[in-house]
Length: 264
Ligand SMILES: NC(=O)c1ccc[n+]([C@@H]2O[C@H](COP(=O)([O-])OP(=O)(O)OC[C@H]3O[C@@H](n4cnc5c(N)ncnc54)[C@H](OP(=O)(O)O)[C@@H]3O)[C@@H](O)[C@H]2O)c1
Image (cartoon, rainbow, N blue to C red):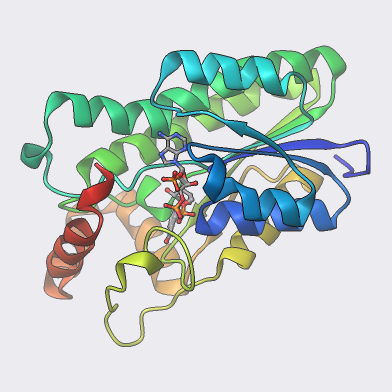
């Protein structure tokens, strides 16, 4: 769909590293922006920069999620980007922490797609963009909850795309790999093995624009070896698990999980 000055675009997790880049790019294209997140003070700079309307809502809280939908009303573009890292061994998580990962990373985007998708279908215009992860295509030890939500998001989005296509509503999913400069991976400051590639938050934002404009079904925003690994994982997951182990994947996952523990 075309993005014009009449387009209203909502971004969840808009104060995060990737969410901010997406909000900027949509603003630059002329859209009216709604930024959402848990913390008003953290949303303030991107709201000021883009002239966005702010909705503060904790997506782990069901009443907050419903209120966010009601306050946003009709939007033309919904970028469902907010997520928790959900990293670490499953046995380190208590039941409430597990629920929180699913609520934020999967339940909230599904409910938002239901709410906004119905309104978009009535207008026969709209685009829903899910931000998954290359972890939605490759499962790694020490990432079971994150993998579960990001794989789940992929299946949901692909099926929903078929459901909403006859109603003129686009559904796309983006699969970022390791993102440098800002966001949940960059914040950990964990070093990748030599030669491992990264992409920037702006690369993800450009992919969002492409999906909105062309209704592309899925886009990877990841270095070649991560995209290749995802392709291989689809046919030979055991081989990829062995390669990941041999290349120190478990140590990287453990360092990331330690650095992200405060977000559980
Ligand atoms: N960075 C990467 O390398 C990478 C790679 C692949 C995929 N991704 C995906 O890209 C998306 C954005 O990630 P990011 O790197 O920008 O992460 P980030 O900087 O940690 O941002 C995540 C955003 O989600 C929000 N959020 C978390 N819990 C929430 C809750 N309960 N209610 C409402 N908002 C909540 C955060 O708000 P607070 O600031 O208040 O916590 C923040 O705005 C995520 O879906 C992530 O899985 C990232």
